[in-house]
Length: 439
Image (cartoon, rainbow, N blue to C red; front, side, top):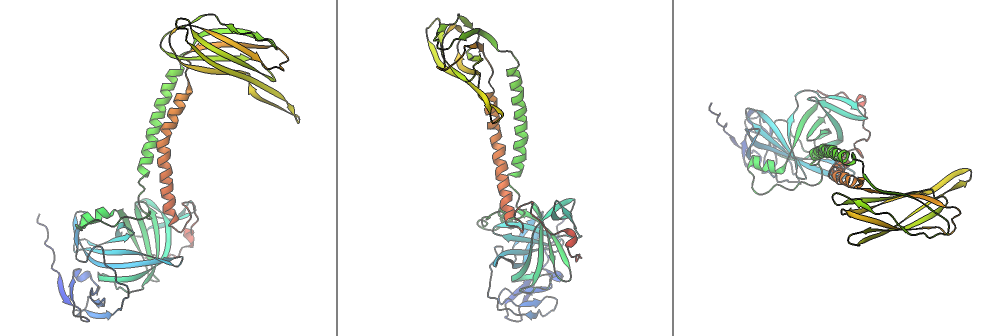
């Protein structure tokens, strides 16, 4: 199949200033704005009748020159029109640029740009359904729900090139933007009609490649209304990965905690008040690989404390590991309520104890004001699993998804700070309060 040849450009002259004018939109063009004198000309008149002349104080240089050709969706398009529009927010004006793209066989498309953020826009043929969802006015189109982002009055500040409608400087329309990133659904309303359009967010790099523009596109500033979050996909993926790793961690913990720790030594003793009775335990064997040894004290101390010094001694080498522990427990009644603090029990882990024969030197001591003897049980167990490793691993696994989720939340907060609402849960007009002026 042979591609259709490009249609010829109609060459004319501006009747106001005599400058050459190339008409690219053919019978679709209604008005032409002369690039030299900015006069608005009637393209339907063979002589390009002058409709209006403007002494525009503002002159804007398009980033994409008129007449530039590029490919969008595999089809060639040409830039035939350009306008700058703006809105006022808190007495400050914010301007964006719109480029009118034309293909004689496919019609019109629009490229909009604000602070380096671009959208490829098509006119919607149909009427989106407006409704109230979760306290926010929404518009449904194509099976997708778009949330109201901003309502404003837009005015036309500068025009250049050809347009399929009658262009006027300072034309004002009410604009309502609904978003479902990366798409933006907009309604532009006048007293006579409402026109809906659908925009898809594209990058400046995509625009530059599509139209073969030299240099680099302007950098995007801030977060645009329908700019897709760079964290959304990563957030979902990281939470799924986190769930997989947590399941694996739980399986490892189940395997690790399943065996009963080996009992190495258990002795029961009693310590009288005022007595200092150091002693040496019987010899015991630690077998197997190098592993931690848990030393546990269980006592019946009450309203007092007991301090115990330990030395774990290797019989073969004489090397000793010294450590000390304290147990204390107090209770009483105050104001008719019972209270207590401390614990009668304590345990400590001696890490990485190699196999061999050992004994313990134990030196217990009671508080000087102790009123009664204290009974206690000393227990040693080998290779007692610790939840510390699994807890630390869980926290480390949690860091990436939490970090990305925090970034995603900050991104969305920045987005909605630019809207009519303080946040995504802000209030909005109800759907039944809207004027049904769509056509």
